[in-house]
Image 1 (cartoon, rainbow, N blue to C red):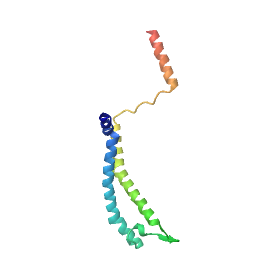
Image 2: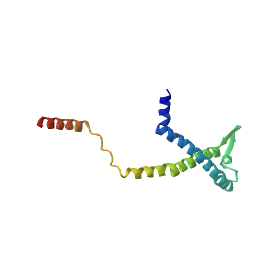
Image 3: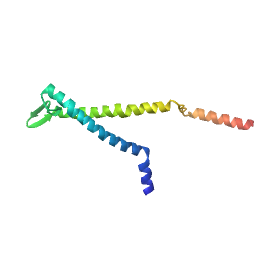
Image 4: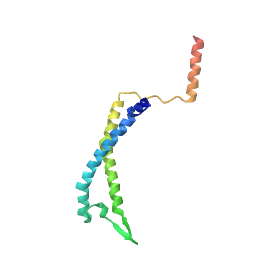
Length: 129
């Protein structure tokens, strides 16, 4: 039981996921600081509101609607996604591409016809020997 758990934990994808969570949390703090220190003051200057959640609010029959709240969440997601892509995913893809330059690509798998022809060729060689 413990051996199986150890194998599960030591798999590369579990470790990668743990690293991604930690880095994601760190980027969330950075993006939060950018939003609080740059985006919200910019919105306050443009719309006269303290942050985006106060923009385009309205009531219908006592129900409060907030388009700004949706926009705030969407922008937060886009900022985090952009930061993760440009600072983590893109550099790692470039690194992987550089590592692959020295390797030959794997050949395409043989079709059924090619496998049959290979078997026939091998049988003919063994008969001739």
